[in-house]
Image (cartoon, rainbow, N blue to C red; front, side, top):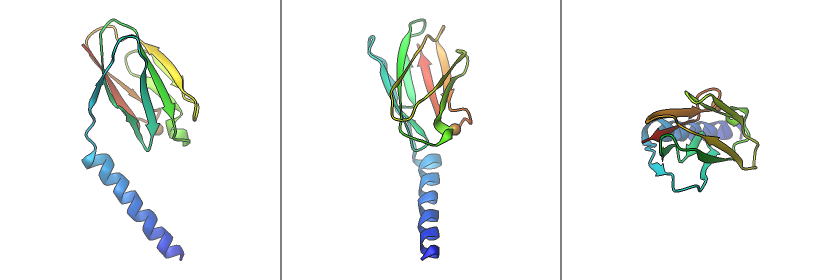
Length: 120
Ligand SMILES: [Cu+2]
């Protein structure tokens, strides 16, 4: 019985690894007006993980964290000096303004969750 569970867990883990490294092809989502962009935090990925925004304009990202693991508890924005705690199961709005065109990565504190703001 235990062996069986370990085997199943192993297969699930392999599936996750394959999905994470080979199959995952993120699509960019474009920000529309003042509407917050909802980002789901679950299963090791931000969805969407690529977000197109306008440079120099504030944009609100609404994080919805489903993943209770401590890995997902923070969102850090490289180059924007923003770091927020994400509560489980409660939306958390984060306003950021990418100063100039370019790519701004946002990650969890261990850099396992990864997303990108693409400012144009
Ligand atoms: Cu993490």
